[in-house]
Length: 268
Image (tube, rainbow, N blue to C red; front, side):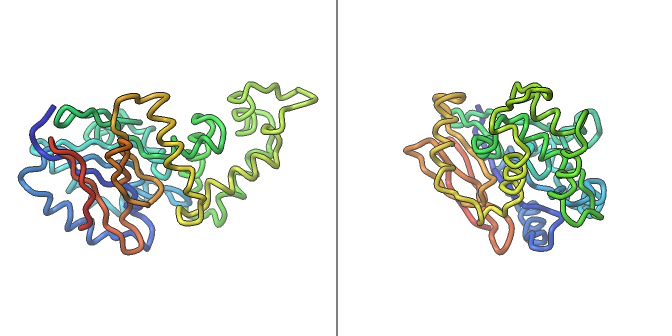
């Protein structure tokens, strides 16, 4: 438990042109003396259809600013789907300094808060979380020269033995040599799921997100207040123990402030 404030941001998507990069820099420079923890809740960096190393180099000034916050402000980085490849860097200087995690639990004012990026909610429409994250990591490695990441992944699926299709079928518990695979194992189903992953947040059907978030709390995080991002739709619903961090793209600059009194949604 802590007496200071926790600031939570997600979905800055540094690496795309409509990220509010300059405003985010100003935000970091003016966090305030009463903040003791900054949670970066995924998709801070944009690796999909980009070269991850190139994106890191383009944003080295921001990374250095974030690193310089320690030890006065602890910085935790929870991996998102668009920066999922960072999970490969846990032993690096970058990984060690950012305390990379898949999820995080903190307590303020007697309330336990669980922090996840939010793609864990969306994966209910896709299959297993492991399958979803396999695709997320592949998209992170698509690179700047790939015009259409979906086509790239589809080609890999079509390669057969040892490819992504093998992994998907293994996750689903289906033999590659089965003459009657379940419908969800078919290539058309996989192609459709790829299309869903590549949709922009505003193009997705959002009605189910809150319902799935409540289900996740009941199934895995019972009694905890769930904080997530991913959908780019900020809100705080204390009565449901749910809050969303919003985004820092296309004019938005949303964040959550947590202290002993609860959660407040703010815009910078």
